[in-house]
Image (cartoon, rainbow, N blue to C red; front, side, top):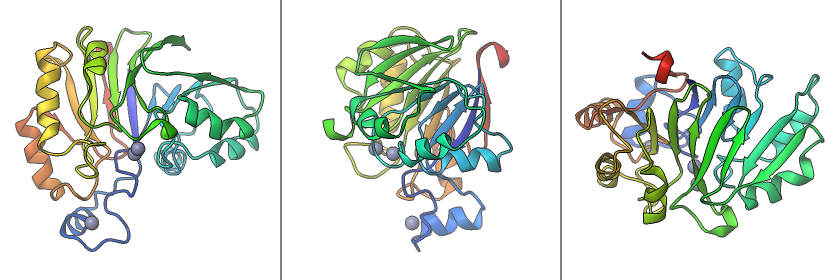
Amino acid sequence: MRIRLLGTGSSDGWPNPWCGCGSCAAAASDGILRGQTSALIDDRLLVELGPDGPRAALRQGVDLRAVEVVLVTHAHPDHHAWPAWMWRGWAEGRRPLTLVAPAAVLAAARPHLDPTVEAIEVSAGDRLHVAGYDVVAVPATHAGPAAGPAVLYDVTGPDGTRILWATDTGVLTGAALELVGDGAYDAVLLDLTSAHLPDHHDLRTWPEQVAELRRRGAVTDRTAVYAIHLGHDNPPPDELDSLLAGWGASAPRDGAILQLGAQAR
Ligand SMILES: [Zn+2]
Ligand SMILES: [Zn+2]
Ligand SMILES: [Zn+2]
């Protein structure tokens, strides 16, 4: 599995373009610009459809023509921007596409979907097989029902590589841990917004969550652990990088390509 990180930032991005705080200044002077968190898996599966992702793909030298599945976690505007469906509707050569998302996202998207899009509503605990990928919807600790109810995605690729896309979420519930404790992941990508608790993680809860996943066998020494959805309530990038390194993790930049599973070995 190959994951291209279209963006790794919080909803406001990091730096927040309106902000003069030290963390934003340090990120800007290091040239580390993070847009809204989104990923493109094997060019076929797009995770999150906020305003930043599609343009970031083009800036990274790829387009979305080969996308067969769009997974959206919840209806917050950095994860789902319904005009994207209208703009896709103006594209030539549109291929059939499956949108997998919770109810609130589908309610916003449906008026704008053309017949090439099949919409599948998911709620926590649902398991489905789309375009060769096994997808499990895991309950997020995030926002209320009006925004979802928000889910996270456990995705296993055709090559057997298994990842956990865990944003946006605060500390996982027992029900979520039951689902994700079912064997080891090749990669875990976990929310580290560092603000707006308890809907997100911070520098206290993040390593505790990783430790809990390790206790349950979901994270092992072979699991790559990444912090995503990063915002300016985190310390400056070099400080954050060294904290994460101490926890056996990292904060890949926008545009990073993660080679996982069989491709990494
Ligand atoms: Zn978000
Ligand atoms: Zn700031
Ligand atoms: Zn959110």
